[in-house]
Length: 269
Image (cartoon, rainbow, N blue to C red):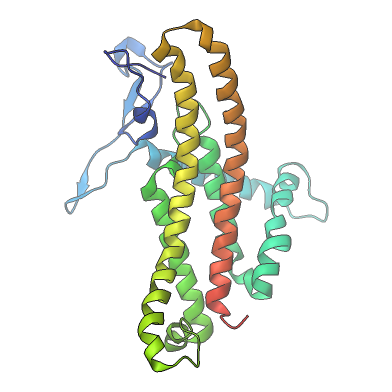
């Protein structure tokens, strides 16, 4: 938490993406000055600069690969250690995804579980000091939602055929005049699903961090140590709540994606 020259707390600066990483404990001869600048470049006129949210996604991806490979490289009848912990979370497979999607859900299991753990790691990494929450960036959540949308439409086309999938968007047997109303409504509803996934994850992750920073910022804004105990207690309580929310949001995103895929693949169920 830092204040600017006017004594105002910079809350937004800690939430937004940046082209540098904060490394306050590394300042050898003022070379880093508390930050490591990340590469900035363009490719065919498109900004492809590396930002701290991109770095956090790389870290989350690396952790995902390492933990999964470490946990399941030696399969056995009795899970132990890290594998035991991960298989506890994999209740998603037997208690959530399979009941929602049926046995056909096993086809989409790698994507759904990868989505869950990637979002979970991004959420948890953002709770470590001097890091950033990639899922607090609407561009990241929008990309995840677009992938979910593509998988949903792909499942519908794969199970029902190209024309059959789009035909199933509107209930059969409707009078022709009603189609003029129903077709736009169904298209809007189809687009609203990924939009809701995007906004829900983004808003929940950024709101908690802003609240924590505001509580801590009260100490600086009010310039009083008397509010420090209450501010720290409230911030700590919200921090613990954020851990829970990180798991819940990863779970909700995965479950809703499974539900949308199942609805597209089996519209009659």
